[in-house]
Structures are given as C-alpha cells and as structure tokens.
Amino acid sequence: MTEEPLSRIGRVIRGRVIEHRPFGIMVDIGEQQPGVVVVTMLEDEPRSKQPAYPAVGQEIDAVLLGFTAIDHQPRLSMRPSDIARARDRYGDSG
Image (cartoon, rainbow, N blue to C red):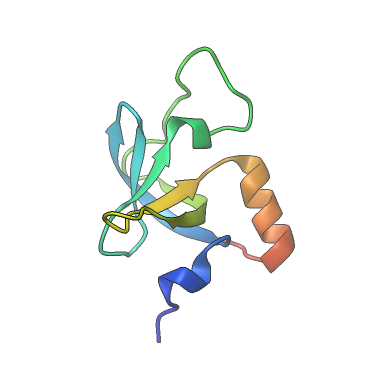
C-alpha cells in the first residue's frame, strides 16, 4: 500500500524534474499534481541572480512542505538545510 501524501509532509521524497518555469521547477513525485519548488526554496543562501535549475529528467531529493489550498499542489523544498533537518528527524534517505 502506498503511503498517504499527508503522512509524508516534512519528509524527504524523491522526484524527477519535468519542467523549468520562471518561478521555479516542476517535479513529478507520483501525485496527481506535480510538485513545485519555487526559486527561493532551491538554495539556503539568497542570491542576487536566479540559481541554476537541475536538468529536466534529473532525479532530485526534496522535502514535502505541504499542499496549496486551492488545487492541492505539492510544495517542495530542495534547500540542503531542510533536507538535512528532515533526514535527522525522520531518518529519511530520499
């Protein structure tokens, strides 16, 4: 049986980058809606320039932060500090 999406909030999940957008990246995580990583959730340190996006097709680890209220789209973080914190808390390996 597959884990319920809500039980994975705060945990590391694995996905595949499916699209680049000006605001971030779209990630297939096996949900009805693709997950979204906005630019501010790609890196720990803010930059004056937009960070480099992972390549389309690349597998990534991210933390499931929750879901948007309107269309239930998964919100993700790829910040190294968020991933490390989730792994420390849950022992997730991605």
